[in-house]
Image (tube, rainbow, N blue to C red; front, side, top):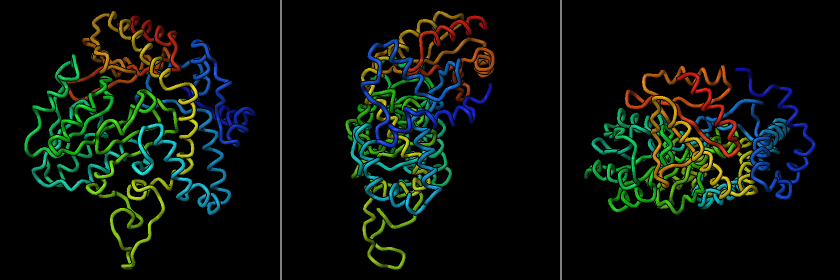
Length: 433
């Protein structure tokens, strides 16, 4: 496949006259310029993304294309950073600037600025929590065999290093209700269970987990909860504060379409005392004295950022690019975006189900399904099938393979996708099956 964005294309984005004035004014999208009719709206949304023309991108669970406005803003930020590093750092990396950005993100995620730290994505946040909790030999962590590698391997590392036990609940077929999922966790909990770790939206089969119920279960037993929220922002209408979790790790480069490698870690106020930071350049949040023994004056940063966000100072220009992505969601309406994703999923599922030897692995229960439909075809090499779709049909889908229990094609539905994209996918699969 050709490079998706040429240098000429990128420079064209930066030179777009309608873009740069908006960035300079601090507002990227004007609600008056957004189409009102659905047909025009989703075509307009697609035009805001940097994506190779003619490519049907159905793999936002891997990574979504970035907004043109975010790329343009990022370029300008790095240009300013390079031109005068000290002046840029004072303006963009100071406590007030960071709090403003975190406040905007917190409003979008449904929490407060003091509860968030910038990360390079959900994987960094999950590793901070897994390595920061004081777990001892014999303590148990319950997760699932369906979770992403970036969500499970930090616990396996802790098991190798500290002697904890990690229980990965095996795949037990397509869940028919939230109670079935909760029941599996209830059965796995023992007196030694210290952590429940699970996804908000499973990347393997698209199951939207019953997060509130699982967090309530854990809290009733004094168990710490860690939620992998990599795929939720931009796909679901999210309010972290309502979930009842202790920690939540989010990514912004999937459905939100911010730059690749941007995300945030939420740590609930009481839980912050239990999680050590992973990377530090000051005693912020974990000691009262500096290295000379002098009482440490507060950094002025939001609490979670001060304790867990040391590495984010290297990526300040990228985090400045999250604002346009949030602004786009608010301008279009998150409720409308969620409804569009569900509409596309409802269109896709029967098309895939009707294909030869197809088995849809995504739950059909309304509260368990969202913007991913995973399907497997008996006797087929799904990795080869995904490559052929991308190389020959210019339809990008994911292939998920987790041991012998799961090998399938994953279709990730973004509001910018069209019904023509989905018809192309179904026709291309039908030719090959």
